[in-house]
Amino acid sequence: MQDANKTTVTQFVLLGFSNFKTFENILFYAAVLAYVVCIFGNTAIIILVRLNPSLRTPMYYFITTFAVLEIMFVSVTIPELLALLMNATKTISVPGCFIQMYALNALGETECFLLALMVLDRYLAINKPLHYSTLMTKKFCCVLAIFPWLAGFTISSIPTIFTMFLDFCGPNEINHFFCDLGPLQSLACSDTYITNTMTTTAAATGTTVPFMIIIGLYIKIIMTVSKIKSSSGKQKAFSTCSAHLIVTMLFFFTAFLIYLRPNGSQYDKFYSLLYTVVTPVFNPFIYALRNRDVKKVLRNVFVKFLSQTGANIGAITRLKVLTHHENPILKPRWL
Image 1 (tube, rainbow, N blue to C red):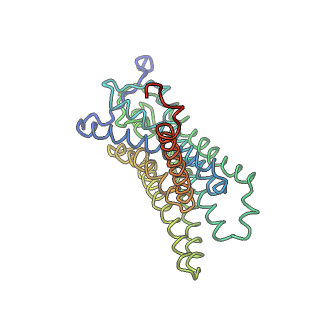
Image 2 (cartoon, helix red, strand yellow; image 1 turned 180 degrees about the vertical axis):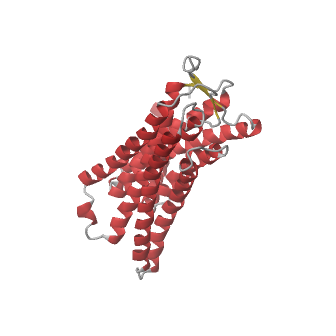
Image 3 (cartoon, one colour; image 1 turned 135 degrees about the horizontal axis):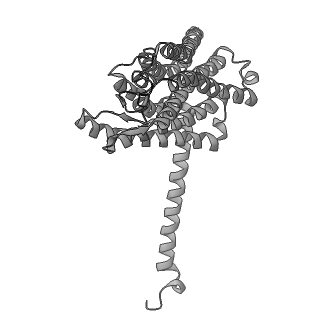
């Protein structure tokens, strides 16, 4: 009888930032700008690497993979956030909620492993320079690039499946701007102890393991770079590593803050803005556009574009002069 009286939830309501109307307006335009910059910046990186043979190295292969991942990641979160800020009805179906939750967490954990892979590439380039070209073959790079996707989508499936088997029969309002594990599990009518345990285990595996790998590799990189006698060599190595390290720490800090506490809190949606909106805006600039090789290629492309534009303008100007002053045959009959 008790089970018969239960009502099954058919849709969830995303509260988002409905309590902060002024903040919603500012956030909408900020999110639009962030989405455009992220898509444009990462697409530019992909095109630039594909069109320039000098950038077809393992490092830029992983950067291109990261750019594709970033485009997918922001396309899962930001459009949903924009729709939420625009619409008065903020509902999402139960299947749509679980699909969004799985896609977001899978892409996020894929990014964790890919960040570790990018540090591994720099470690081999700095610590094993003589063996780097023989180790990082095209086939081996493809195998390495596939691993983060397999790991991320496999690990994320575990808490998603456990959450799907929970009973949702009571409140259906999610205090977030997208479906996430913690806020969703807090709405369940059934016991969530096992689900919370599996979520914490998966989050620890998907974030702590790559994080520890990154820290360990960076310690070895710093030890190697500190032995370089050339100050310019040290500065070049440290500038590349420091930029990557800053964004990596920001991404992992927010991940630890949210996903290692599966019960969630009312501030999670504000923390989530850091890694879903803020960080993706800076990633194209930090991971690639600040790189000396990329800036050199961009400079060459810009100079070539200006020279071609100038040549075309000069040709048009000379043609006009020739038409009006030097070639009477081309003049209109009434002149």
